[in-house]
Length: 455
Image (cartoon, rainbow, N blue to C red; front, side):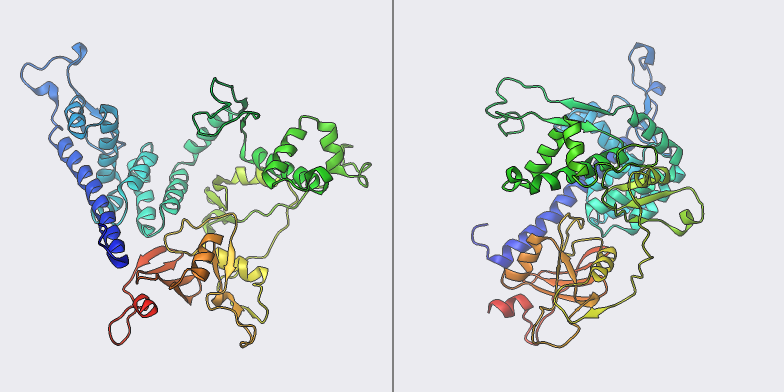
């Protein structure tokens, strides 16, 4: 391996990715072959030990529509896999569900287009669904196979919820009974370094589980208090995390926190019920709804940074904040300006088109995004250089790679579409549908862009 050049290492890594997928797929197929060898009822065998005495039997491992298999056969396969029996049975359940309940996704795994672990997560996620409902999830996920893992799983989650809204309402109700706040318990050795690897010589941790609306509201109040604390002399040199920690601690002294939030000029303001009125920042909630849901069909909303929510959960979220309605954004609109900074409307349209970071294979969503000029901005250049057609949202790290690492090439092919070429000739096209591998662009003499750059 040490004698490989840059291109050789990249090619070897690509081969190892394929080998990993082949190994995981082949194990899945072998588990299915083992299941097929044990679909007969053990109780039909001569001299079978009755089930009442611990004898073998057929059991359902997967969801509705997946065949049964012998209960005790998995112990021997577990030994061969050098794994536990329960883990082996779980693998078998996922494999059976994929083949019999999610056939489109199963074919993508067999063709090495989707990682086995992603498919297994979706199989487990959809197991409580009926076979018909699982088929609906299968169609949606198969259409999005080029997306990154996080987006595929988020889509599968949303479609699974949508397939059985009553079941999800029951999950929400049960989960709401598990709310609480917990203070960490100190254990011997934590002062020098606990299991997580970090010493906690002078701090304790608090964990909380709240409803989405209460969690968002608490986070906003902590932010409001942190903003105020940051203007005080004792808070000027503190990091944002430290200010937020001080703000949360201040909630233990509610009168002091209230005084800071209200400020000197709002001491007498009250709401309609006579309660003290607090300044409230406006909430921006980006909600994606299908036309069917808007027309009244039961369904879900996809809320950016919050995931799939029932409409009643969205209503609860909006009830905590002042709501400002914004017009529908036309993603076909294109606008150009003469200045360097991308206007807010251009940024918004680009992020709605791309779903986030457009670096190859990026998960997409990120808290901090830079809007980079795909074609570098020239102060002496022509007007209209800043536009929807020259805007690439990138995380700061990816922005630095594109700008300062030698040999990277990127071109915007259209609204939301970008072609990347790495320094040593790997080519990817990134669209809202995911990242695709494409052939490199070559010069007349057959050299790639990377080879031309370095040679």
